[in-house]
Image (tube, rainbow, N blue to C red; front, side, top):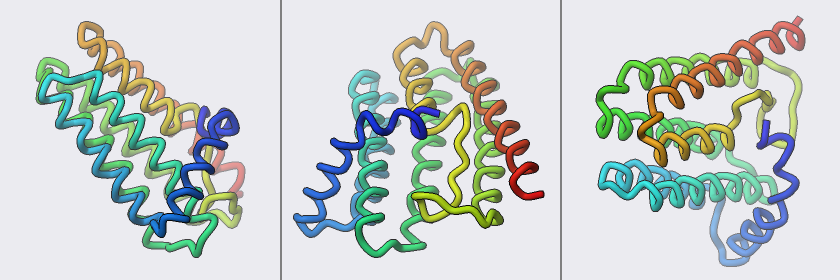
Amino acid sequence: MLDTHARKFVQHSIDTTAFWLLKKGRTANQVTILAFLVGISTSILYVLGLPIIAIIFLWLSGFLDAVDGTMARHTKTSPFGTVMDITFDRVVEVSMIVALAYVHPEVMWPLLLLSVSIVISMTVFLVVGNVSEKSGVKSFYYQAGLAERSEGFILFSIMLLFPSILYWSTLVFFAVELFTGVQRFLEAKKILN
């Protein structure tokens, strides 16, 4: 929801960074890889007991993820770049869940449910993007929903900062993600009929 409706408030800084990197000769795929490495570092930092630095890295990876898309739209887009971007985003999310499970094994079941809800929501998202004849700014049809990447980062930040409520914040994340999957499924029924 925030990615769709609030991006206009940060788009200037995304554009500025994207154009600066393009002038420096960087490619969107290079920034995708950088965003991935920064995102994976989040999990390592959390396991090392540095949750605040981990959150900074998490949000930096999200910012770079937005920058790479802007760079791709202003150059020749790469279908493999899209695959790499979406795959790396999921690996970063899964690594966060694994890090949380490692540090807090008592919350393993809610974290497993969260993983399942992400798989369901992303399956609907990717299949609809693939079979839909609609297109948008991105290289495929982007289905908005209650939980987009920014909402996930907010919820991950809460999970990292407040381990005393990790059980409940994980269940909230699970519910929001599952709702988003259902929301996208129902929208798919409308647009594909």
